[in-house]
Amino acid sequence: MMDYVELLRNLLSYHKEAPLMFNSPEFLFLGILVMSVYAAIYRNKLSRTLFLLAFSLFFYYKTSGFFVLLLVATLVVVYGMTRWMNHCKGWGRKVWLAGVVTVVLAVLGYFKYANFLGENVSLLLHLDFHRLDIFLPVGISFYSFQLLSYAIDVYRRELEDERNFLDYAFYITFFPQLVAGPIVRAKHFLPQLKKPVTVKRSEVEKGFFLIMIGLVKKSILADYLAQYNDLVFGNPMAYSGAETLMAIYGYAIQIYCDFSGYTDMAIGMGKMMGFDLGINFNKPYQSTSLTDFWRRWHISLSSWLRDYLYIPLGGNRKGKFRTYLNLMITMLLGGLWHGANWKFIFWGGMHGLGLVVDKLWRKITRGRLEGNFFARILGWFITLHFVVALWIFFRADSFSTACLMIQRVFTAFDWTIVPVFYQTRSLFVWLLVAAVLIHAIPSSRFSKVEQAYIRTPFLVKAVAFILLIQCILQLHTSEVQPFIYFQF
Image (cartoon, rainbow, N blue to C red; front, side, top):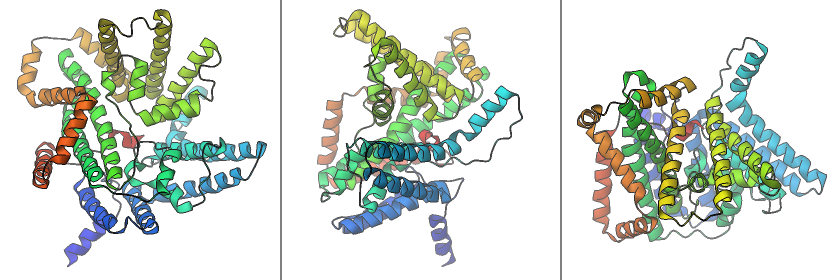
């Protein structure tokens, strides 16, 4: 009896060293339980909303502990201020919007950027600075952007302020997308709550298929590749240029599989419950230009930065110089959003510079090369390697480590290492190749695979899921690996 009590206590308690994640056995158990209850009550709007809202807050508690109270307090304050804003006209609306932006950015700024700001100001003024003991709540960047987009859309009168607090709170806290996106817009999600939810068998099966794809990406591909990548990024001098290059390519695949795997699972869970969370990735490594890449990578963030930062700054409406300046500002702040570190600002700034060069090139060529096959292949090759090279700075612990890794590739490359590397790390190589081939599948073919899965008998689906779990168990490390974007 005591064993069951202890098991229940562990299940209901927050463990800082082991936060709840989609790819954990604990979540598998909770997910089955939640979906079973949901299937019985989803037709009743109030029951459905209260149940999912309660579980979403519990889910956040299991990832960030009592910082769930910070989430609740912030969304309550933003709700009240936005309601007041909608009753005002003229300057009053601007004052209330400024209040919302100040509150959200102040909370985000303190938890995410206080130490970064303190360190840099102290360095500039030659002062001593002792880092504050600040825990970064999981997902704060994501739900902060959702709160801001909601208030701004209401201010612009593109969306009516939500009078039903439960619907508003449900939108902000909906657990599949709460801690790592996608950043769902209120004008896309809130209307879904006003309609009867229909859970079709085909949508449930599509959702489960996406969850399985997400598990393959995260728990098989990303987590296994990470084991070698971490070794090289942790000590580049111990590896040759060829081995370092494999880790660089490996990390490019790892971060895509990790983040898009989470997104697939989030969207899949939404589908199974009758909700559409949109799309967040569209084969970004097939891009033939940097502009194309940012239309395919983390689409919800790219569109958020465009609509709430780039366009309000003036977009491309105020001449060439302002267009390029606005691009640079947007991408620099996009880099800063990813983390309180100069390496992220550099990463964002280089992407901004790349977008400026891309726009200049398009003006010079006037689009004459867009249909040329060889130009597209060259554009794909340059774009891919520009993105991959910048991932080094994104992942490395410091600028010096990133520069050292690039140096190792060009100064310590030994072709004789390649066959030895394959012999010792053949599974790494084959998983890397498998990830590339999966990414290369055209969207139309992927849809056919999805439809084929839906048509298969239940027994086949069950066997496929069991085999997937078995593969994960065979390849997993001793601990459940967190998602990379949990830290943002």
